Image 1 (cartoon, rainbow, N blue to C red):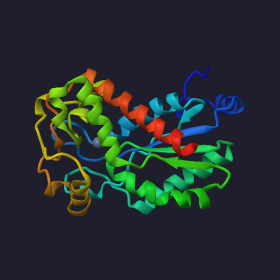
Image 2 (cartoon, helix red, strand yellow):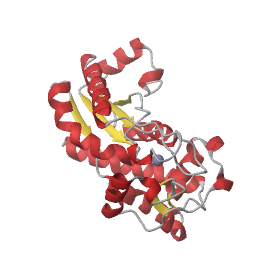
Image 3 (cartoon, rainbow, N blue to C red):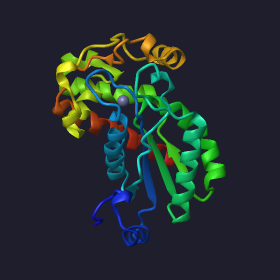
Image 4 (cartoon, rainbow, N blue to C red):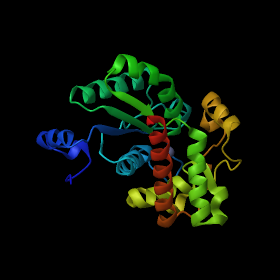
Length: 254
Ligand SMILES: [Zn+2]
């Protein structure tokens, strides 16, 4: 039994022992530092990534959790003050260096898990290169289905509080705000929570957001409605997301 699954919190002898014990996989979250409405801070996707990667690693088994990539591809959020964004090529370079570093120590699989919507497409586009240029002896898989991910949140909210399902919009919404009540409640300003764009999240909306920027769709930066957030909803969203992602990664791994 390892003291922790978090690579960052381990000593090198502990990592060496874990590798010898068959911990050959590493889960890495790809987050963001970007606006999340008036009621949530910029770091939401980074700390949600920390938690999500841990939950996914537990479900996959014999997996450690690598350092979350805290900043991601957030060009579509640059209309709001404070957002810090990477170009897709920058994120790819970081992922390449993660994979080659981990492979040199003997890890044989790296799972990339986006905790931010803007990272799904860049991760999908870079997978082939990560596999060939990164480290051919190391398998690289990523979870890349954004619409399915939003669907996991919808299922979780429907189970926990069916009347609030309409509040799932994909960004700073009932699901994400509830997760933050579980992860960093000290940073949630619940009294400032307000509805944003509530037309629902689908492929057409995603295209519009990535093309025109979020501010053109929702002036307050929210997709969905965070009102009614609760820890119970948050725990269910975290668990359902981790279940769905782990199952999808196990399926692609074969
Ligand atoms: Zn977010």
